[in-house]
Image (tube, rainbow, N blue to C red; front, top):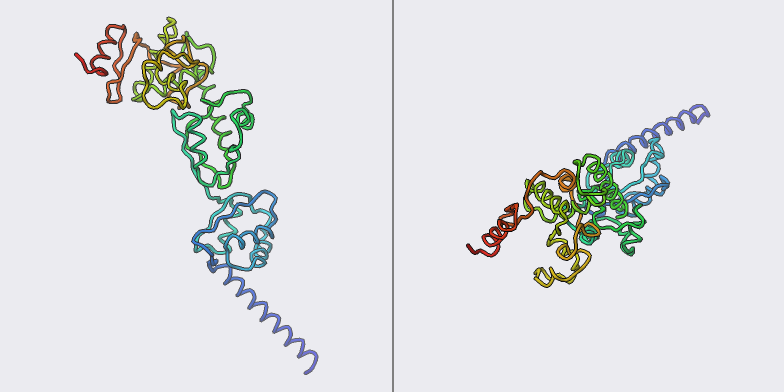
Length: 334
């Protein structure tokens, strides 16, 4: 075969092979990846190279050759745009779709809901149950945890805002707690800036303590402002707050669900029957409505309230009227 003809044949073969490779590559990019399980999850740390990302996906359960994924990442021109984060893929995802997800930062998220009126102990228990949340704080005591979230020297109770928090899978629980702590700081500062004049509260911290009591005492949202008004009236005249939730908080794990007369007479820093003024710390995590009610209480002459048993309360201006309400709704006597 003449040299010129041989060169033509070789060039033809090269072109054909290149075309075939291009068709094969196009077909592979459009074809759904085989997965070892119904859902494959992967957390990519910052600084992970594209080659390591490709290898990690294969180890996680993407059934293809890691060099194929890596070459696709490189050929696309987007290899260096892959973002760190927690990702999840399901059957049907193609190599092209996988890379799009990584470049867009289309992460898999989870949620944890922290409820108004919960204590810090309940918050930590819920965080421990939250899915795919790394328990970095598990070995920390309260002081160490508060330092880790940027509030050194403060007590934890009342310092975290109750809300629903969305987080990336694999993130540290301290990240969520920091967000909750900063959210409470912002909302408390905002509420304090809008406080009514003449309140018997010296600081935002005192407003936070009062808000936690209002949160625990409220049976119906529409009564929150009036309940705050009762406690503000008592503070103004130096009357003990006499709030059962604070007493219960002071009993801690000794409380068995039944508040007895002896509990009301046993002095603790949180017994608002034996001690005047506010307790030393919040007794729960108040929500935004309780914060606002504590600094903008409803004007009222009432000094007492008692639960009807249906979630609502009877408010009284004097002790005689209050005793009648107690007899009617608590003792069930005329």
